[in-house]
Amino acid sequence: MAKARCGRILGEDIYIEEGDTTTLYFINQLRVYQVVLAALKALDQDICHDGCSLPSTVNKVIKRLGKLKSVLEASDVAAEKKKNLLSKIDDFLADADGLPQDTSQTCRKTAGECKIGSGCFATGALNLFKEITEPEAPKKI
Amino acid sequence: MEIEQIENRYRGISIVLGALQAASRGICKNCIGLEGAKTKVGKMIKKLGMDLDAASISCEKTKADLQSRIDSLSKAAEELEVAEECECQKTAKNCKMGEGCFVNAAVDLMKLVK
Image 1 (tube, each protein chain N blue to C red):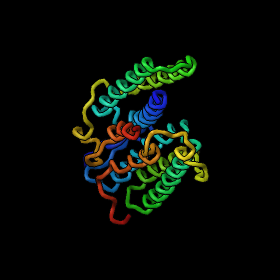
Image 2: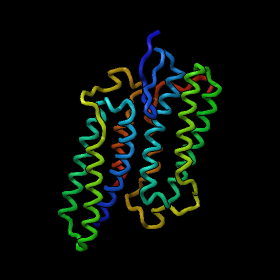
Image 3: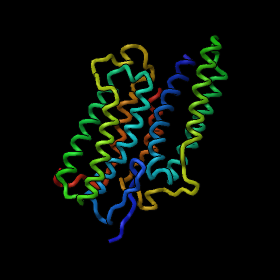
């Protein structure tokens, strides 16, 4: 069966067999984590480092990554591909783990430092997940 | 107020650039979406520099510090890796995530700055 490139994650081109939507689902998820985590790392250099939205978002990302990992483990993705994708999830988890997770800090808006309006960069970064609409999550998820 | 607005835009562009840098390490590197985003962000940074020039900021040190940070943004934007020949990766059938686009959504983070 023909193979098609459908992502480049952590420097590696990822190929799937045409029609393998289960594997494609996981690859698309990893594609967006790559971008979301980069945005969160940029936020960590900003005043958001001392706020509560960034840690809250980081915690959500860690939780989602953990869920993605367990679902991938239980999936029928080919063993070698599964091992490869699981190692990338571990790399992302390690990255996320290096970001702030203490939600007891004060929101930078409340502290009078963040004056961008009602929006929030951390929440905005999390919304990047909504860009992925295909393929649907495998039935077992 | 002027300096606050410039700071806010600086913050937004920094985050957009972080996301675009990650996208450029993916298949988006070969995408016209990223090529366009690079141009857009370059223009945003240029405008930011011009607005800083025109701003009435009495403290020279504050102004110079902001200018230096904007220069760093400009360098980072120029260094965004985009392939010489780009094609929408959806059209090329490499990007199969639906209608959405990480790159456009990343640039749209600037809309959070009011």
